[in-house]
Length: 357
Ligand SMILES: NC(=O)c1ccc[n+]([C@@H]2O[C@H](COP(=O)([O-])OP(=O)(O)OC[C@H]3O[C@@H](n4cnc5c(N)ncnc54)[C@H](O)[C@@H]3O)[C@@H](O)[C@H]2O)c1
Image 1: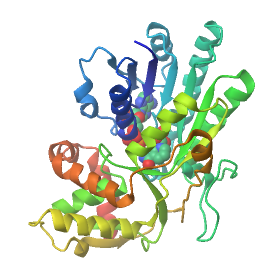
Image 2: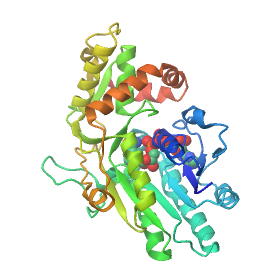
Image 3: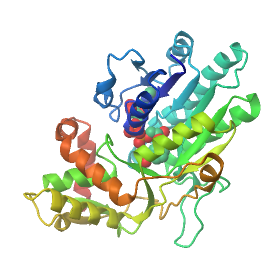
């Protein structure tokens, strides 16, 4: 084994994609996943790695200091890639407490544990704490505002983004105060395989296939920068291997698109690929619903720093990425059908499908 990584939240959407990426590219590294398996975590996302010598899954909470301490020592961890979080803005509006607990207290717990462990090892400069964060910490942009850069002041608007901002500040402070080799990345909206079907793109794909309404907040004109998840994983790989401790890197897909355009494109793609949809053309299912409170208008990322300093740029266009994603959801019906039958999906039904009436 060469390097030994602890990946928190590795059974979630981006974490699982990252674990697959890392295990495939660096088969002689050891990857230990720590995940509490909340509604968003799914061990099946890592099924193909189970039983491999260089992979271990541990069910546990990042707020549990004893588990974190034990794993750092017993696995001799050299780098933490920290994905674990409560990640859905709508849920943070309905119930912020879990966001503060996991995103702020959990990140603090990891930082403290890693600091003590790293200090006891005489502070190896090669160790890393990568904190995976979001562009939402920067707030909302108007149509003509310049994209977020690493020096844009923080102005989080939702309990989710405020909790991520709080964790970013802690990570930054641990570098500043203790010289812990931390790095923060702030990335735009991801999409791709294994994304829980409460987020826009998988929700729309599945509802099109089931002939259910496609709920769109407000007038659908909100703009997001979309990045295909494998591009994000590649960027994180570059940051872990070549990024400078104490730095922040913005990661974006260079794809600013209105929500309504995303949904229309998905409708057209699925109309073409699936001839016997319950409702066709699928655009007939589009239903505008009451806007989310405090809904940020536009996010856009200036990713020049990671491009010029570390040589990373995204490689998947939005059309390619959406097609790959649609194909994944078409080919993995058993994956999402099993989630739809779970009790937690009632949350989605209550909060989205009823609001259109
Ligand atoms: N999805 C995006 O578009 C996006 C964009 C930028 C940044 N991010 C950040 O990337 C990270 C991963 O996002 P995602 O979309 O994969 O999230 P996700 O909700 O799909 O997965 C989160 C994972 O964390 C686990 N988890 C939650 N609480 C935990 C706890 N207390 N202890 C251990 N594990 C816990 C869950 O079980 C799940 O496996 C998050 O930190 C998020 O803020 C996401």
